[in-house]
Image (cartoon, rainbow, N blue to C red):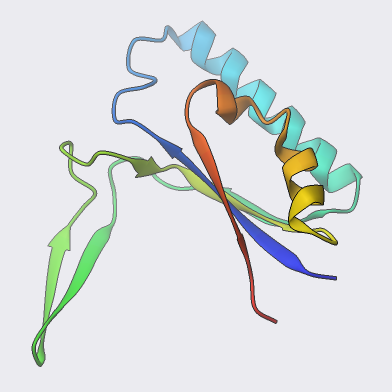
Length: 114
């Protein structure tokens, strides 16, 4: 069955003004949504990315340029990922229709090559 990568994008600081209780409620909604995918047999893998941590690699001719990132001036942040199995893009869209992330940001769906 085809596999799809779902990437959640958000703006820097989207969650900065939330209280710990509000943030906990949001996390619980993400967990419940992910658990529904798992229970339905569609979820292959998922993970949240560590906040404010990573490296940016750029080719600079024959030399590799490595910088810390993402930066605060970044316009969009990828917060994690889900890999799901579905027959078509339409099926993935139906799976994502109630994803809590859509209240805060956007989702990008990409088919994975086998």
